[in-house]
Length: 157
Picture (tube, rainbow, N blue to C red):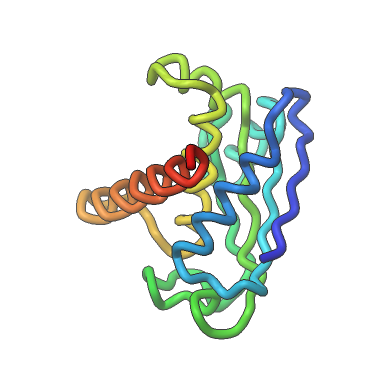
């Protein structure tokens, strides 16, 4: 699995842990080991710009996922070309550590835990999961929780 990470946020982040949780999620989801992923950590200003340009949103958001492989766009879970079959360029996950830190404070956990959650969330979006409808949200968030739990258990062994 080729995962590239670039921290352009100006915030100190344990990028090894972000890589590890992304790799764990991809492995657990059965993604082809030759697949490629890019993770970019950005500041609030750049995330605000991306959110406005690509999502029509106001202000910064916590995570954006940009699928790259044409075969993976608009496919449901398990139908993604990157799962099982041919290797694929999955796409980019963009994280904003400053937004994650604010959300973490509200949620009562660490900024690192929030970044790990957002990384898994982004991976699932790249694999075709969404949370626009209540049933989709239950499935995606349940899977997200299971992946985070299994990753945390591997770190404590």
